[in-house]
Amino acid sequence: MAGQLREKVAVVTGGASGIGRATALRFATEGASIVIGDLDATRGEETTAAIRANGGSAIFVRTDTTSEADCDALADAAMQEFGRLDVCLAAAGISDATYVSGQESPGVEMLTTDESHVQNLASEQWEKVIDVNLKGVFLTDRAVSRQMIAAGNGGAIVNIASIAAKVPLPGAAPYCVSKAGVWMLTKVMAVELTPYDIRVNAIGPGFIETPMTATMAADETGLQMMLQMTPMNRLGQPEEIAATALFLASGEGSYFTGELLHPGGGMFHG
Ligand code: NAP
Image (cartoon, rainbow, N blue to C red; front, top):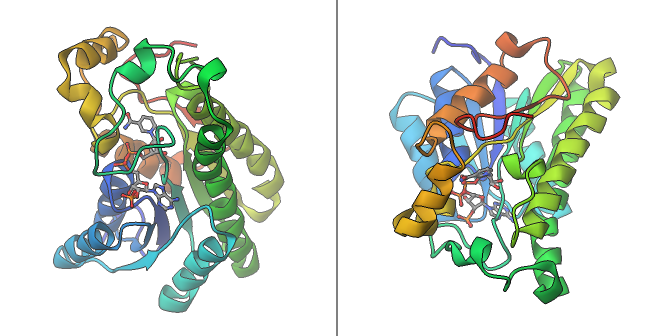
C-alpha cells in the first residue's frame, strides 16, 4: 500500500471512536500498520476490521491509558506484532468525569451553569479528568518513546490537546488544565527527544463532531453556542483532525516539533 506512512507502524489511543478512529483509518490508508489502544473492545475491533477490509493491517489491544502496565503492553504489542513503532497518536480522552464515549455526553449545562465551577467541584471529578487526559498521555508517550529510542529509528508523537489548552471554558476547569498540561508535556518532550530524532507535537482542535460533542450539538442552545465561538460557523469533522495528525506524523511535518496546531475553524487567533 503506497502512502505517506508506508512501512510505518502507528499506535493510536482512543482509536475506537471519533478523532482517534478517523486518524487510525487515515494512517492506514497512508500505508501504516495500526495498533489501536482503547477501553472499548467492540468498537476497537470494529475499527481494526474496517482497516483490514480496506487492505490494511491493524490489531486492537484493550488499553486503559491510566494504567502504566496497559500503556507499556500497548507499545510492546506494536513491536511484537509489527517489529517497529514509528508514530503515536494519543487521542484517548474524556470531557468530564461522568463522560463515557458513546453514551450521553455533557450538555450545554456544563458550560452555562455554575454546577461544574471549581467551587462546586468534587476532588474525584478533578482527579478523574486529570488522570485520563494528562497522566494517560504521559504514560502513553513514555511507553512509546522508550520503544522508539531503543529501536533507534526516530519517530513522531502527536498528542491531542484542545483549544481549551489556551481558552478558559467556565465549567470545564479540569479539562482545560489537563489540556494545558498536555501542551506543556508536548513541549518538554519535544526538547528531550530531539537527540533521538523523535518529534513531539500536539493538536488543539476546536469543536469537532464526535460522540464527545453529540449531546451539546443535538441541543439548539448548545449548537448555537459552539457555532458562535467558531468563525467558520460549522463544527469540524474528525477527518480534518486526522489530516492535521497525518501532516505532523509524516515527513511533511519534518521541521515541526514542540508545536500545538489549532484546527478550530478560526476559533482561536492567539
Ligand atoms: P470520543 O469519540 O469520545 O473518543 C474518545 C476515545 O477515548 C473513546 O474511544 C474512549 O473509549 C477513549 N478513552 C477514554 N478514556 C480512555 C482510557 N482511560 N483509556 C483508553 N481509551 C480511553 O471523543 P473525541 O472527540 O474523538 O475525543 C478524542 C480526543 O480529542 C480527546 O482527547 C478529546 O479531549 C479531544 N478533543 C475533542 C474535541 C471535540 O470537539 N470532539 C475538541 C478538542 C479536543 P471508550 O469509548 O471505551 O470510552
